[in-house]
Image (cartoon, rainbow, N blue to C red):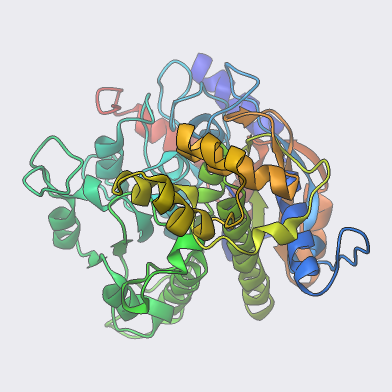
Length: 481
C-alpha cells in the first residue's frame, strides 16, 4: 500500500509535458548559486573594459533560458545533500540525505535514465567528479549510502545491477574504483576488476588524453558503449586543467559533452548491418558540472569562477547543438546551492590573476618544505596574491587553505556564509528550438519541486519510471548496498 501511495503521489505532482522531443539533455551545475552566474557575467563584462564604478554588463547565452525556480529540500532536512537531491532529480522522489535511488525506508526507485534505457533509448553520463559520485550515481545505481562507492561503480556498468542495467557512455573521473586491489592506485578492497568486466561486456575503455582523442567528436570507429575515466579521483578543476601539458591534459566538460553528443547522434544515424548501436528512439544524456560544488565548499573563488565559466561554455554548446538538432530538448538546474555565496561589494577583476586552485596549491605545499620563502615565491603568485601583506602571509601559514581562500575572497569582495549547502531555490533553465521551445517555456515557467523535473522528462520521452521501480522491487533489497 505504501509503495502504491508513493507512486500515485509522484505522478500526481508532475508537471504535464506537452512536448515530445526525440532526445533529452539534463544538465546539473552542482552547488551553483544564483550569485555564481552574476559573478561570471560581470567578470566577462569587466574583461571587456567595464569597472565597478562604470559597469556595462553584457548578457550571456544562458541568460535567454531561465524558466523559473526549483525547491531543493530533502525528505529529512531543509538542507539537502547531493545524494538526496540527485535522487529527486533522477527518480522523482524525496529521500533522506545520503541515500541514492531509494526511498527513506530503503526501497529501490527507478530513475529517468533507467526508464529511458529500458525503453530503448541510448543513455550517457558526463561529469567532472568521479563517475560514481552522488549525482551520476543517483541516475544509475541504488544504495542506502552514497559512500558505497565501489558497489555503486559495479552497478553503473551492470556488474551487480539486478536489471543488468548499463549506461552506454560514462565519462568523468574515478578510475581507482574500477581497478582491483592488486593495483597500487586502486580504491577497492577486493579483486574485482571492473575495467576487465566492462571490456568483456563490449565497452571500449579510455583512461588518458590519447585514448580520449580516439573517441573525440565521434570521428573514430569506436562504437557504443564506452567508458572514459581520466583521473583516479575527481577530474581537475578547470583552472588547473588549463595549465596541464596538452599531451596529458584531461578533457574538459565541453569536450566530453561534444564527444558524447556526436557519439549518440552517430549511433542514431547509423545504417547497415554493422550498426550494433542502431537506435530509433533517441537518447537521454545527463551532464554534471560537478566541481562548482567542490569549489564552493572550499570557498575557492578562483576555481569557482572557472568551473562556472565552463558550465556556461557547455550550455552555449548545447544551445547551438539543439538549434542544429531541433528534435532535442534540455533542462538545467543546480541540485542545491553550496557555500552561501553572496556579492556584497565585489570586483571580479581580481580573479583574473590566479592560475591554480587551492586544491592544487595545497598538494604543492604539502610536498614542499612549507617555508615562508616558498610560499612567497611560488604559492602566492599562483593564487593572485603576489603582494600579500604580512598579516595575510601569517594567516596562510597558520591555516593554508582557509588563509588563501579568505585572502582572495576578501580582496574580491566575495562572501561565503557556510562551508556546506544552503536551502535557497536554484534557477531552472531550459531550451528547445522552435515551437518545442515555446511549449517548453509554457510548461516549465514558475516554481517547481525538484521531484517534478524527472516526471516532466518522463512524459516528454514517453517512458515509465514507475515500471522500472516495480521491476527493481521485485528483486527484493538484498542487492542494495
